[in-house]
Image 1 (cartoon, rainbow, N blue to C red):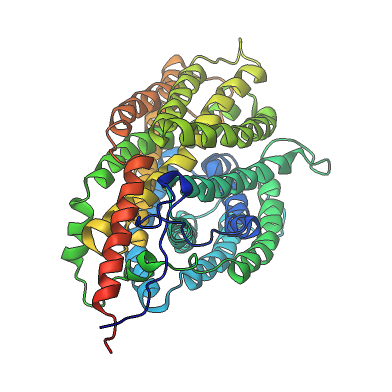
Image 2: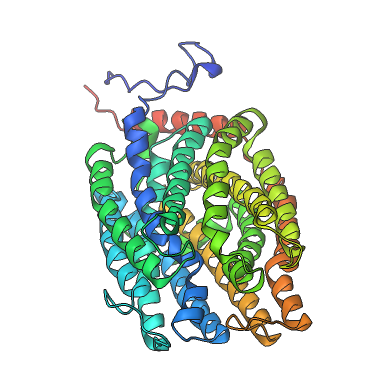
Length: 494
């Protein structure tokens, strides 16, 4: 009885060079160019998504919507966005199982994102915005829904694709580190816009948003082309990759849910996300309003964001080194500690005793902390995808990453709506020049104290995530071992 030799499977040299081991060298990794090309569309997409962090302030100040109305619209739109995540993740997995690619979802999402961003950010087109211009609630909500649908069509398949381009834990850190770098660079480009000399003011205005969406929209298509053209659907396949499996055609919803709820590491990571997402949603939603309408530092907001994001980009390298040496959980926890310190510091600022330097310090701490979050969470989740593939026999990267975005968006929506509601109910008015003590207390409660309190429990959950780099290497060896047995059982006999 004879059969063909199976492809060689291996792992990095740290696992030893024993030729009889099931851990020789893994298939060829991505080239540096391919790694960068993978992340480039995220740069353009997050440049285009930049205005969403301050859109509620723009619509309240320039387009005539009340904070409570905006809170309701944000909650509806983001909950719709969250509900579509599992559907798109499931469909992306099924398409990948049949065709071996996630690229059509990414292209469709990116193109639709350009269109929806224009109508959401520039409701009056090229015409100058007249004083007291008002946007209808239906218009705002409708384009918000399309905006989030398009973002989901891009984001989930793109993140899941990264999991298929890397095998060992350190390589995942690299892939998602590049992606995070591109995300922060895209955000940096947006916040540089009002500082350009041809704008009359350094504050964010409808005019700034108009030219931002034009610049970002022009970037999306060429960067998307480089990614789709030069990055493979997956690494050169090993036996593990060939038999990771696609999602079976007859897989039922109950089977998918079981694969989610029976995955303990995934549930622990989800609990940590819930805490972090809710707190960060509150802070992000009220930040621009706090800086512009209360501190009176709207003219410095863009500059402070540019500097803080620049520091965050530099910090990505430090988080990467720390994760490789001390573990992803440690890096994540230290990042969240920086976020908590920065949020508490934010709440202590006041217009009488605060300059923009104090604001910059707080924003830098928070932005650098979230830089750690941006690498560690998708990288850890990618390890958990491998764990789920080993335990259940099916690759559900799209489903797992859709749960990640579902939780993140839902919590950000709930947190942001709560923050806006607290500020609105307690009487804060973005158009007023003098604010009561109650209104100020509500604003500080919604963007400082409560967000910090929500993020603190995430630290406990993070340390309980059991998958380390060593355990992930064991999982990969077991996946390879099972793949070899499966391969041998299907060999033709002579």
